[in-house]
Length: 358
Image 1: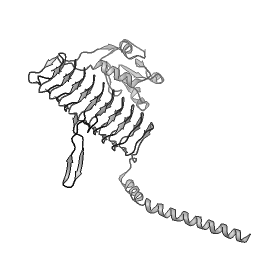
Image 2: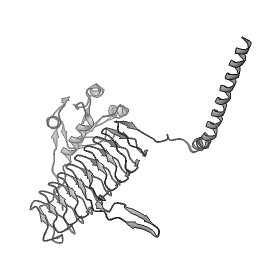
Image 3: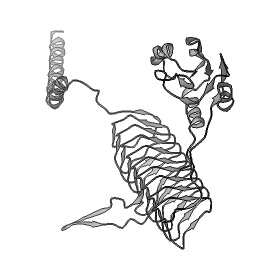
Image 4: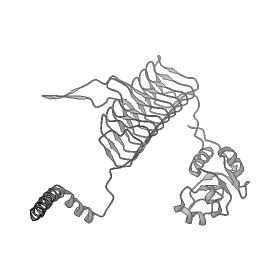
């Protein structure tokens, strides 16, 4: 069983020493946990990152609040004043809620191939399977039911949550988190159409993941057909994402849940992709591209910027009327073109009549 984490309580002054910023009000107040402005109470710290929650700030019973300098005068509660309250909240939440630790060693029923190399400081849970030639680095945590295929490599301090699967030859860097049910290295969808149906194309590439990458629950990343599928350092992938074969995702790119990325897409560094976006194959994004949730992207986007293709939400009745008009656009365009042509003809006739009178 995981060892129970221990943390805190900490005074507000001690938290400021870890997170930065400065304290206004009583710095000795003890903080045991984080909570929302609306629900926080004794021993809990809340944060304000958006002024639409100003009313909750006025009514909060939190022991302390984290907020930006321009919002500090809005409350008399003890407060940590800092330029990026949400970042500070993330650090405080980590400080007060450290990850549970597991003892080093392997569970009795773990299946570790004799040709695998597992660091003595790693923890391997019940029913985990580690294949021939696999490497598991120092202080890794391999939770119950994980399958690490032959010749895989898992970097130091990486955590694989229950039932994650690494197909053979998958490479994971250091300090990564792979959540439950994620599958890395399954076959890409490579098929050649023949007269009698489909001929499967062997997928002989790998999945290669850099350092400090987070991969959400039930996300699937296909192995490359020939080249590798690559996720670069510090990328953050949400739950239930599908990434096709030969995709490359740049460093520090963040992708929200239910995004689908077809094969051979190249996504640059520092990109952000909103939930349920669909990205067609064989296109490229430059660095710094942001895609709104639900957008369908079918062409390359080499320049940084924010791109969206989602029709605004509306009532069903109004949407049906709009849909009728959308279906009439071709007819309307033809009528406008005909009207413009007729106006040009009339203008030409009028000009000709004027010349004759002169």
